[in-house]
Amino acid sequence: QVQLVESGGDLVKPGGSLRLSCGASGFAFSDYYMTWIRQAPGKGLEWVSYISSSGSTIYYADSVKGRFTISRDNAKNSLYLQLNYLTAEDTAVYYCARATSITIFGINHWYFDLWGRGALVSVSS
Amino acid sequence: SSELTQDPAVSVALGQTVRITCQGDSLRTFYASWYQQKPGQAPVLVIYGKNSRPSGIPDRFSGSSSGNTASLIITGAQAEDEADYYCNSRDTSGNHPLVFGGGTKVTVL
Image (tube, rainbow over all chains, first blue to last red; front, top):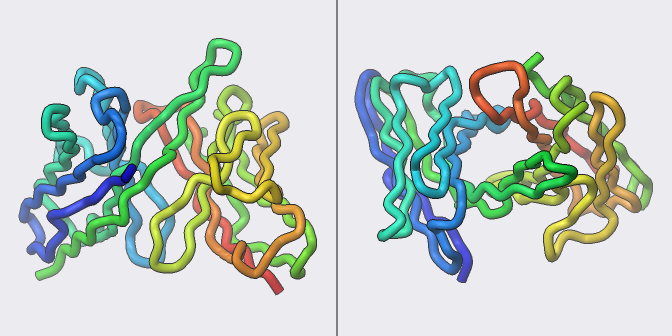
């Protein structure tokens, strides 16, 4: 079964840390770029970070740069997000998603074709 | 601009057609992808590329693009299409490569 399953969500205090995991199954995980996307309560989607299939290319949104670290273990079919120095503004459901691209006239157009169900991170004292 | 702008809400009568728009400079170069999200559920990809639908997405969903505007069109809206819809594309102006629109709540009357 092709799926992504997040884990590790929890209630943490401001300034605390957390590690999210995303397990992949049913597809060749090592062939795909992967992303983390979050959604604060009642708000829209916010792209957080992505990592290339080999792990050699990584990008972060400005809102998490320097605090969050994305990584992957292709041998374990797993994606991770280390969240440090958490604030209340980081409270959200965190989704992992598979990123795929289609090339049209030499330009890559990206999209997220497989999503997990999400992991809730709550930051509160 | 690094933003993708969507109308916050639109409504459509059952069986009629609705167009959801997404505006941004990056859309002059990159196609938007579109996601449907129902309450309490993860988003689902409905349109990607020029106008492609993943397997299982009804053909009443289609996409188009012109200039700096991408559109998601629902032809013959059904009650189950009531949801939030988000566009996503590349960000051509900043240091991060991807950006979402703010989302459009579609109400089927």
